[in-house]
Length: 166
Length: 260
Image (cartoon, rainbow over all chains, first blue to last red):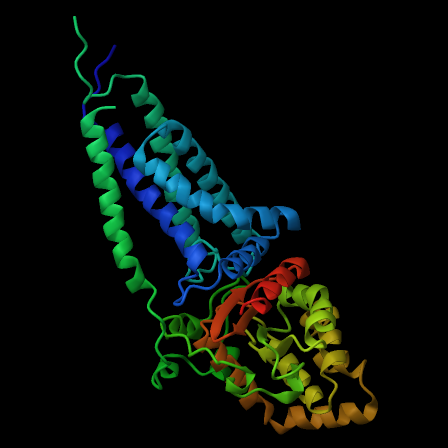
């Protein structure tokens, strides 16, 4: 079996991806729950306000909007932590990639339809713009690379694991 | 599990914890608006007359400038809100929730919001004293006739006829935005006598000051698109941009109203 170097490019991208995406996901979930306000508004207010933002994309029926709004912030925090810890990396990396690609598609659709809405990603209102699409595109590319490389690297023995006995 | 991998995981968590410690500084409560902040922006009337290169939705320059300005302090009640035109405000001032809707008569999303959600909101929350609804003008520079339409709506509001006029302007938006015939659209729902008074008010040139005040207020809330709804409840301000489905809006309002 091929030995993987501890500091090859693939591993570097996996690490960068894990740190960046985990940080962004945890912050995004936290921001949705606190709305960037002091004192923090009640959870019900924050989640129902986020539901308005999900609804502004006009993509989902009411029940799905409520489901996404009530679960996504917690899922973002949980996925961010799991990605950071690295247990079952390939599973969480795949899930995060699917989510980011989904966000990217939603933002791109809103931009192409000239929808005058905010992204709803964090606490600060950010209009859906070309800049936002590039940001989301870059994150989606990083997530895809991280996931693909995680699968490739998983086929090789970990460089820090104990050497195999002869 | 290798020890080094565990160590690397702990280090990563530590790094993110450090980052989290700095997060509160990103969320500091906004300071009161400085008197110099509006000076950053062009006056709204200049904006309305400025030519736009295309029909692509853009953020008007004054709005971009205003994004850097701090949010105004949240009023504890509707009495704390500035420049409320009683003719364009509905419901009870003592309602627990106040909604300021910044809209542009030529914006399609504003039309959708008005025609789909507004009626149910009025019937179930405004007339029952739960929500105080204020219509604010925010005519975007990219729309050639929206300021004219805002003048007519304000003039009609002074005669107590704001609802039929707003309804007519939104329902016939596609027609008058192509022909520019705002006057004809408004005349169709008012009597000849009322229309004479409306035209006199529009020609009087006094309505622009009120529209500009709404626009400037929108800038302090960092409004950069229409419709934008600013909710006030219990001293907190929640700005939201976009169309709202009534069922989702209802859930949010119920949450606001259930706060102790």
